[in-house]
Image 1 (spheres, helix red, strand yellow):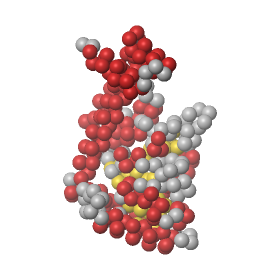
Image 2 (tube, one colour):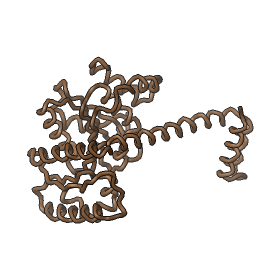
Image 3 (tube, helix red, strand yellow):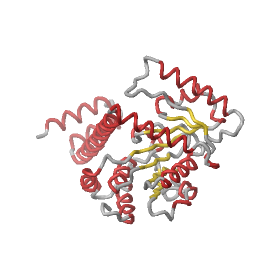
Length: 314
């Protein structure tokens, strides 16, 4: 994979996504080659045209000579648990391009719309050498917020039917969006929602409550992705955001924060796994679980007793 073998990359992604043995060793091996790619996340409600935006952005980046890795997080099939592959179908214009790698991943019930292994897949694509990695979330139900933990720049796509900016703020989009793009801007109501968003964005930017690590007032752009209108302007803003992050030193600080969060998550998962394994074979701990299940002991006391027992062990 490190030598440029796309099939090897695909196989490693499968191993990581299925959490097969050797994942830890794989991630240790790629660690020295990480941090070169810029990760662009595209999120938004269903029907906002996220796939088409990603498709057009990919075409623009390819026209500049950049190779692109795309992660399309699709809904899971209720029968196989695999990705539905709808986004790969919509991006089929790039499937024969050797410098575009598209991977569909199934959410498999994970909260926030991102597959649990998305972070590791990003690392594999980064180590492979893609300077740009684009992530598109499923957009099923509430707008996904987990993407902010993975992306360097987050684009939130809306359409005139998305409702006013107050509803957008309720969904937490003001905190997520680095760039707003109102897609399908030829429809009625586009100018109204753009005006409301710009007003809300300026209020949020001017507020002393909102934490800022860079001087950045979220731009609100118009686009018609199906007609390739507004895509050049969108990519220019993405690049400007990256430049501002780098000049302020915020890009590395944000990545450090993500690495700390990843460590905490992995630590919690590993600790929980080891605790549960110990509980299943220790008679004293089994009796605590049975007491909680039987209603003679509350769950909080059960946790205290289990941890006290485990901490007494050498």
